[in-house]
Image 1: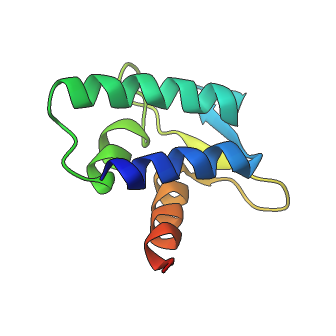
Image 2: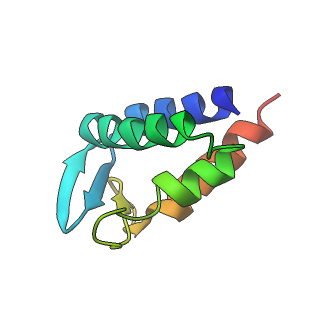
Length: 96
């Protein structure tokens, strides 16, 4: 589980994509830092049994406003962050 989540963070860092949170766009580095804080909180409260739960609880929407996060990458349409992270998780799991 930790390796998969680390892989998701690495994919975000390499992506060059932007991350929308509460109506503002942020680069991958700021998005990573924000999601890392949320992940650390969830781990401290034993609420992350797997990568899917991390995506659902930390990488999908704002805990404060409830607004959904989004990701936009060069040459691609904006997608909900949950979609982007689930695609990346599938790619990680498909690797030998």
